[in-house]
Image (cartoon, rainbow, N blue to C red; front, side, top):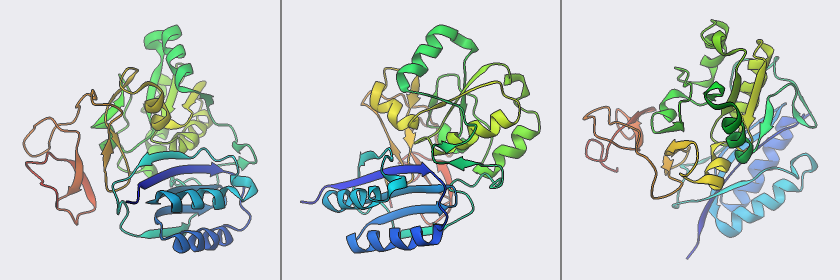
Length: 283
């Protein structure tokens, strides 16, 4: 029986011909029967792809054959089968749409002017040393934080990444400019950009959680500073790092505790909401 696997990765690197990369990635995935979502831009690549384990391994080998992608940090997770409805490979101005493509500067080493990278262990060390002075800054959409977040995190009220820059520019977070700010997101790609945007706007001490929540959860499970479940962009919708995960979410319909995010108002809807199984059974 085939073992479904999902890989998540991104690489910030200058790509002089993004459309050529798109066509190559499309051909590789189609030849292997993989599905998922791949964004290519002049700044690099951002991909989440799923399929049977042998095929996903072949995809990873093929992708790493391109020199700029050789050292990509590939994050593996268990799939459930048919994790993505289709394959989408697109070229866009940004691999994460903050709406400021001209502000993002990339070289062979990645984002220029981003936050200092901290491993999961270094994040804990920073909090041990600086205590409540440290600010965790969520780089995801607000709905994702409803079921899981770092303890005491600042969660901006945003529906999409496009909402971050106007909110930061409004001065809403100016009181944090002289505190140590640790940006975090699912796999690291959004906070790579966000940390640079914060620094560009005068935040003096900015860090980013290297590898995102995924790597932190692998390192510490539910024994560290993370609380709750992690929203993911596939059929699973959320994952836990252990069977001791705290349930933080509340069903929008009945208020019951739940870590489940579902399409709203129905399974075909594009909006997301925290909904328990009683109020929204599995389709």
